[in-house]
Amino acid sequence: MEYMLEMNHIDKRFPGVQALSDVTLKVKPGEVHVLLGENGAGKSTLVKILAGVYRKDAGEIILGGQKVDYSSTNDASKLGISMIYQELNMIPDLTVAENIFINREHLKGWPKHIDWEKMNSEAAKALKKLNANISPTQKARRLTTAQKQMVEIARAISADSRIIIMDEPTASLTEKEIGELFRQIRLLSEENVSIIYISHRLNEVKEIGDRVTVLRDGQYIGTRDIKEADTDDLIQMMVGREITQFFPKCVAKKGKEALRVENLSRKNVLHDISFSVHEGEVLGFSGLIGSGRTELMRAIYGADGDVSGRVYVDGKEAKVSSPKLAVQNGIAFLTEDRKNLGAILSFPIYQNITLASMDQFSRNSVIDHQAERSRSEELFSMFNIKAPSIDTVTRSLSGGNQQKVLLARWFCRDAKIIILDEPTRGIDVGSKVEIYEFINELAGQGKAIIMVSSDLPEVLAMSDRIAVMREGRLTGILDREEATQEKIMKLATLG
Ligand SMILES: Nc1ncnc2c1ncn2[C@@H]1O[C@H](COP(=O)(O)OP(=O)(O)OP(=O)(O)O)[C@@H](O)[C@H]1O
Ligand SMILES: [Mg+2]
Image 1: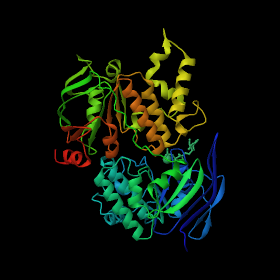
Image 2: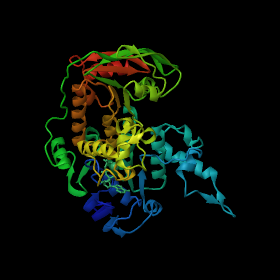
Image 3: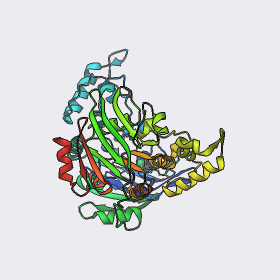
Image 4: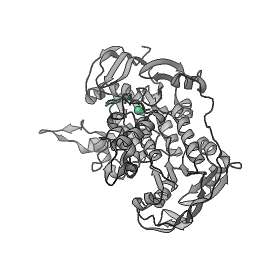
């Protein structure tokens, strides 16, 4: 049997969108098969059909040589297909073992009752296989993101999965955790489990993948061996054109100081941080995940209490003890945690775009709907958001396109100081370039920009200066000319 899985001629339509048409995916036993494509290309839709979340409109699924038909995630899991969800659907008040065996608890005796001992020992076995130092009896609530992901993988293993789907699994993991995940993926593939892996990080894809299938606009473009495919070819397949300038940095004219932070501290989290950023400047923030960058931005934005220190806007001390005050002082913040602090999924796209700038569209408490809509239209096409119209409900957008809506929101606001926390996470290569161009444009207009990013090449290319943090401290600020990957890593790890 050459293929563990064949998906042939798959079609799927949502209202107003042909998400997939005549798509093929063929996965060999034990391989890591990468799915690549721009935001909205149909990657998540395809794997959700495989996982039984959505029903296909047409096409066939052949699993281990046999045609199968099913319509629920439960059925898919019985056939040995598991999906590690991005949202990591764990029940916080249940134990790790309970989460692993949810819906398929081990029963014994008469009347039947749950065999806790067996469940805990089976869970321990699956976790041990992954080399995970997690107790089966601890509550899921206390797990880190990486640990939750591990528990989900343990769940897939204990269900004897033949195919495990991972949709952007590394989006919120640290470098070290990514290394651990890759080790686990290799273990699984040695046991002949096939992995379907979705990611926008091409370096990562090269490292972990065996073969890759590319989708564009819901269509199948091709499948390649990763060893034989070079990055430029893959990008060309994904976006349908060549991209020559990945980082179109323009250095803008540096104006006067826009924001200055002095001795900012928050107990156990931030220690005595001082820096400034000027008009027309992009100040990058680098550091390992957990180094306190997001906490610092939240402190400047007034999102948390118990912060000491001073913030100056245009040379005057500014009270930023609440987000409302920060906004009044001309500070905008695009948050990294888009699920919780970001888009209102039940709103149409245009309302999410204008949400933070309604003052611009109202006169004497009357909203100028025409102006609101036309500004939204403008940003909608500028950001190339893939949806039927600005009235489309935000929930129905692909992950990357939901992020673009949030970016559009902060570009809609007329703020002087713009804080972007991981602005290109989950965004495809083509759209990244567009976002960089907006950043240039804003800097050109004299705005001060702070960009937190874990993507080193991005920070190096797009910043005028780079601040590096480690364990809640600012360990250094490098000029564009002197900054290198090595210098940043040194400041990020050794301080
Ligand atoms: N539940 C839904 N209702 C309506 N439309 C949907 C739904 N889910 C996805 N779509 C649409 O189907 C298309 C494909 O979306 P999908 O989520 O598969 O993209 P993706 O390749 O995973 O993108 P990303 O990289 O941004 O995650 C998009 O146009 C999206 O708006
Ligand atoms: Mg997706």
